[in-house]
Amino acid sequence: MRKILSYTTVVLLFTTAGCKKFLEKNPDNRASLNTPEQVSQLLGTAYPQANYMAFCESISDNVTDKGAGGQDRNNIDPYFFNDVNYNQQDSPEWYWNGCYTAIAAANQALETIRNAPDSTLYKAQRGEALVCRAYAHFMLVTFFSKPYNPTSSTTDVGIPYVTTPEKIVFQKYDRKTVEYVYQMIENDLTTGLPLIDDTKYTIPRYHFNKAAANAFAARFYLFRGDFTKGDYNKVVSYANAVFAAGNVTNLLRPWNTTYKTMTPQDLYAIYQKATEPANLLLVETASDWGRNYYTVRYGMNSAKRDEIFDGNVTGGEWAFRNQTYTAGTNNYLLPKINEYFVRNSVNANIGVPYVMVPLFTAEEVLFNRSEAYLYLNDATSSIADLNIYASTRIVDYDASQHLITPAKLQAKYGSTVLNNALNCILEFKRAEYAQEGMRWFDMLRYDLPVEHSTTDGRTFTLPSGSNQRLFQLPASVKLSGMPLNPR
Image (cartoon, rainbow, N blue to C red):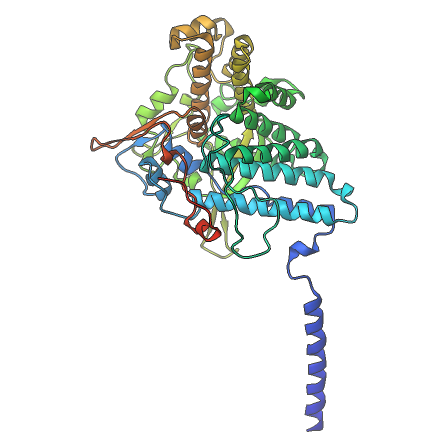
């Protein structure tokens, strides 16, 4: 009996000591961030690990009713201009949550830096966190609010701009104006960009390196497009910073040379790689889009392929068409976004599909600079950029035959030189980003109407100015007192 009591006492003493040590531990990993390296690891999660391609491509004019195909709410609901009745991966709600999760990581990093004994040691991490926070908010305001307009954005409803880590459940947030959100994005972006240090990254393409941050700045100022703020000059300046290190052509994807002879497997292997010079920033996202983008019912068929890839102002043939394949009946695909499957464990038969998404590319930077030149009344420079692009995309390109000129633009589009060049830019971008969702960005900016039809003869139209052009906020935000988008 005495022995039992003695053992019990020892156990109680051990348990009490163990409990004391447990209670002395930090409640979560965030509180233990105390080195620049640890903050850098946290910032690896400060990028939206969610995919916009499915719902953006499906609402655009790049798709049609193929009559048969996979049934996916992220494809069906946007096609009919309805709110997406799904909240898992590839949905607008999933993307919303992915952005705010990224913002939370950026804010936690920034708070850690503010509280560090020597915050000067974290300069590069602060720069990355600020640019990450700006980017996630920019994508949210792009999809869930009206496009920037110097006149109406002072009253148009934006999205919550979150600058501190959440510390209570159901934190109350306000939807201020689009103008306010853009001001906050600009503050974070212009403060953070000069602090970016590429030498701090093992693989710079997986982080906001200098080139990617400048590419984001060029996109931001093009989307804002406010003459009174000199935005178009800024687009050109930031784009030039991306291209300052070398020949522009060498940064573009070699579709009409190296890519031309690749097999689909080869293209899938290279398109999303960090070693591909065109990829300025890549992010890994859980997504079914890699397996579904060409098999869903509302997608690219032969007619859409011809609409996008037949004919262009150069008079030459798009190299894209040579690399557009069929898989089964009426399923057309460009081998770009490829899935890789991660099992839950070594012996598991289940897991999660992932894709690597190019968030910024050299091609977009070139297009943005070309468009900015137009608004600066410099059609010559704009067309020069279009010719650089065409030289890497037209089969058997020959400048003596395929050079874009004002006369060719006039013959094809029949408007002013500036409008003709703008139409050319939008057509080129449509071809470049087919099946990647980027077409929707331009349709938003220019308020372009969309018309979708069905094989049984019905037609559905998304007119300019429609409230359905804004994706709906998750119903759960009502718990934070936020109004949903009007319908």
